[in-house]
Image 1 (tube, rainbow, N blue to C red):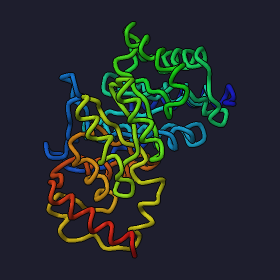
Image 2: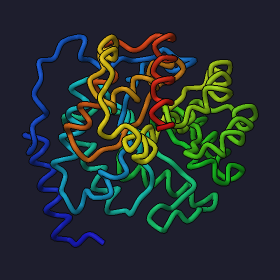
Image 3: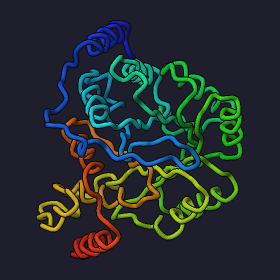
Image 4: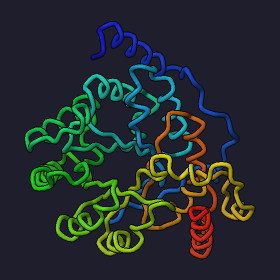
Length: 319
C-alpha cells in the first residue's frame, strides 16, 4: 500500500506538473498533417482519434516511478490530437494516483477514458459479482471524478449475465455515454460474435494485427453491419510482432504511406481498415508513444497496399 508520505509526495508532484511538466513533450515541427486522424463513432457525430493509449504497464509502475513519465506520454498524445485512454480497476492507491494525473489542467476536457468491470486485477484477476461490478463503477467514478463515464466495458466478456444489465442501466441513467465488452483472445471471437448479435454494444475491444488478422473474416464485417465501434488492443501481440521483424530492413515502398518504422508498419496496416475506430498502444516511453502516434498521421495504405503489406509480412513469419 502507498504510505502517507509517498501519497503526499505524489500529490505534490502532480500539482507541480499541472503548472510545468517535469519532462517536456518531444520536439517536432507540427503541421496539420501531424494531427492524428479521427473517425466518427457509429451512430453519432462524435469523432474519435484513431490511436490511443493502453495504460496498464505505465500506470502499474506509477507509484514507483512517479508521474513525470506518464504525464509526458499523455501530453504528447494531447499535442498530436489523441485522447483515448484505456484503463481497468487496480489497487485503490494506483487508481487514485492515475485519477489525480488525469485531473491535471492540461488534460481537462481533452481525454476519452475507458473503464472496465468484471475482474479485480489487484487480486490476480479474481472475478467480481454483480454488486462488485457496481462498486467498481462507483469507485472508478469517485477516484477519477469522471461522470458520466465515457465508456464502460465488461472485461473479457466475463459473467456477461451479471454485468451487461448493469452497464445497460448505467447508460440509461446517464452514468455512461457508451458501453461494450472486450476480449484479447482469438479463441473467444466466436463468443464475441454471438454477443454482438444478441447484446448490441456501442463498442467492442478485440485483438487484431498482422500477427492476428482473424477478425477480418467475421468480426469486422459484423461490426460494420451493426454499427458497432471497434477498438484494438495488444496490436503487437505482447511483443511477438517485434521478434518477427527484429533486425530486418523496412521495405523502401513503405515511404508511399509515410511509414518509417516496423511499429508503424503494423499500426498503419491496422489503422487503414476503415472499421477500426481506435488502436490502443502500450508503452512507458514518450518517444515510443510519439512514434506510434505518427502511424495515425499522414497517408494510410490503400486496399492494394494492405495486401502487399500482408503478403510481405507473411514471408517474414515463414522464415
